[in-house]
Image (cartoon, rainbow, N blue to C red; front, side, top):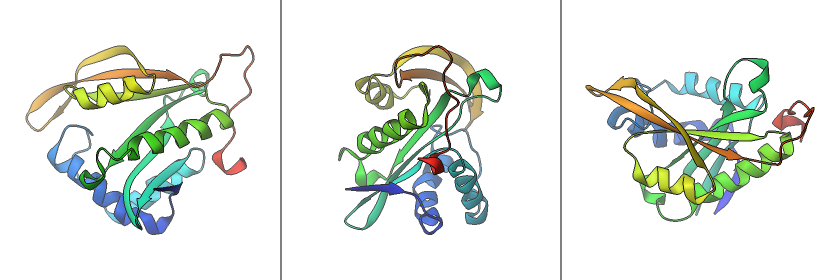
Length: 177
């Protein structure tokens, strides 16, 4: 398995992994599959500050992970939200674990302190996976999203990335590492 930074050429494959989660699940609260151009712009916007990684197995892109801003207020700037998606052909191969390991390493080097993951309920596999990486459940937003004809709750999990410091340095862009 090769884990590397995503490129614009990867976007169609990334979107192909993501699209079934949009159309057939509540894992994401997005309703409509974006066009490739729009999704490319999203990826490039995230990449201005955060890592956006892909995993290839035998030359085939089978997963991706990225971090994004957790909240807009300045005091939140040391925290990120994380996402990881794996093609069904790549399940149970360590792809998500490998992507997250590299993502967390980069986030630590950038100066981030907290990683958060929102998991639409029920999703025991994702909850167990995140717990196995050291994430702890910190709360649940009850009935926060409506999709596929029902209300859905989201559990939030937190992973401290490094020891907390007084007067932390502002995180640097992934492009400055």
